[in-house]
Each structure stands twice: as C-alpha cells, then as structure tokens.
Image (tube, rainbow, N blue to C red; front, side, top):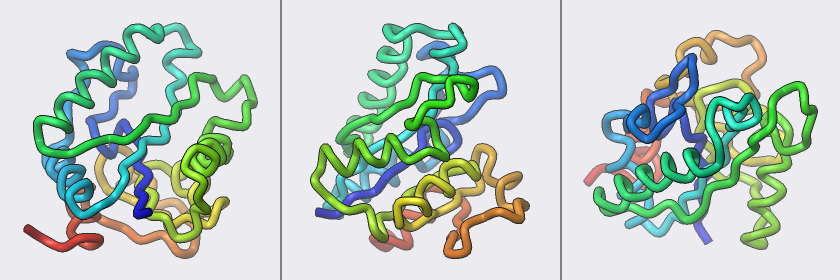
Length: 179
C-alpha cells in the first residue's frame, strides 16, 4: 500500500494564528487540492495527522470541527481526490498526551489502523513538530514552505533527512510527476 501522511493547517489549508474555527475560515492553499487528487490517482492513500488544540482550548467544538472537515472532504472530492482518514489530537500542550505531535500517538494509530510500518512513508508538514513526529517513527519528513514552513526551515533542529518543497503540489510532483 502506498500511503502519504499530511498535516492539515499550513499544508492543505491556510493556517491562522487564531485557529481555523469555522468552515468559512477554512481556505485551501492554492494547488493543494489538485495535489491530493494527483496523489490519489497515483494510488496513494492520503491520511491527515493533525494537532487540533483549538478543540481543547474551547475555540471550537467537535460538531464545528466535523463541519470544517466536511468542507475539506467535499473540496478534495470535487478536485478528484480522496482523503482516506483524519487522525487528530484535540488536546493542548498542557495535557501532555501521547497523541499531540511531536509525540507519535497519531502515527501509532495510523500504523494500527492500516497494519503498516511507517518507515519511509512520506509525511508532509509545515512545523517542526510534524517533522519530528515523522522522524521518530522512521517516516520520511517533508517540509513545505507554506503555512509556518518558512519559519520552520530556519530551525537548527530539523531532522537530518528532511526534504524541503515549496508546497504540497511540489511534493506531488516529486512523488508522482507532473500531469
């Protein structure tokens, strides 16, 4: 099985310092929906692994988060792609849970659900936490320069094997080629 793991805000949709709290605030990053479609057509199962501390902070409830994801699913489907599943951590950093990236709990759930090892599975993120979690399970950390990516790129703590791409479309180009 070909699998790719994507962070959500900053990779698929525009991120916000005040969190995406409503479906209206969810705005796809240009090219991201088509990139997911190309990955889907190339046989990749696309899954999302995302920290969603806005839930734990009380900025949005599960019904609203589900509505945001429904908008994302529909937009991806309209572009011809498919997101197979979303794995999310609703906790805040203060909760010290195992699922919040850079912890590997979300990745452990992915391995359990799909019965796969994540060694060298492309894992796309815009933050250091995304890349650290990927590296911790042996996945392939891919940094995109959308969202917080340009700031993250300057970090001295990037996992040694991190590859850097302009955006999710560039990742799709590298993995499956252009149309």
